[in-house]
Length: 267
Image (cartoon, rainbow, N blue to C red):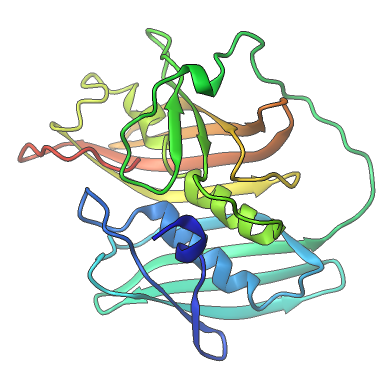
């Protein structure tokens, strides 16, 4: 299954959509998948002149890769400028994700960016491809000692065409990969995944400008410390040319595992 196929849902009834899961190495559903498929379901009910501009999601339960996921879309509002949707993702165990998404009609106005990428970043082609069981090509930028910061070049591996809604969903899929890394770098055990239990708790993405997910994007996430076994990561997504296209925030759960494991989590 490629990313385009993953984001192609089956409409089973009005405002109900079914999504499938590929076989991930870590034995559970990748959180970015459920967010991206939830956005695909929401977008299918919105006027195409309204583009996704923000998503806020809460992970409720770990999803089972053995079952399809049913996405229930609630059409909260359709306005002249904005449309709002709520989506609940369900499996037999109950709700696994609750998501709110907002869409906006394009408004020609000022375009000002106050962020930039480092000028000395290595090109993604010069970095080895990282091992990751998700759908995407990941090139990790070497970490700076002592900093809770995770920077990665990531792109979809197949041509996603020209539909901006599909690219936005694909960016949401990729955006869940490295926030937990940034958070865990504050932990004394660091990225010792055999000894840590991690989970994404909630996830938000703001989409500022259109971008192609099948071209290299820099996901630059900074950890902001931990308390009560929860940590926060925030960061930006830039194109290779330095265009700021999205902002990410995620809270993650990190605990010392009661029993060691040998499978690296998805993020």
